Length: 120
Image 1 (tube, one colour):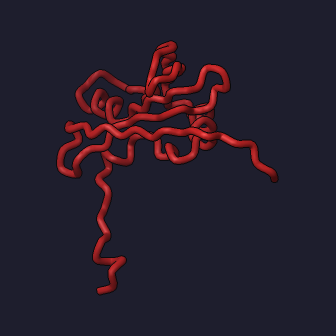
Image 2 (tube, helix red, strand yellow):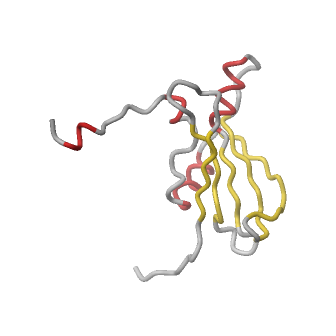
């Protein structure tokens, strides 16, 4: 067996529910604007990582009130922090979970900085 196959690992479904485009702020923002199933709450300005940011909380809309709907809403939560002057993403946070426990949150934070205009 070659090395690449030896390290393969299926990803648990509950780790695929949060917004997958965190690696690209432009794609993330475009998906947020295009998706009718996402609910965005503006939580106002706050200080994060020693900077003032605009905090947006994003979840998939719950279709009901049972435990499964609440879990799906929780698993889909993503918090986006924007620079209030430029509205560019400063950071994004979400949770991942062990494959065998969707209820155990492991926090993840991605920070963005040093934006530059590039030549096309």
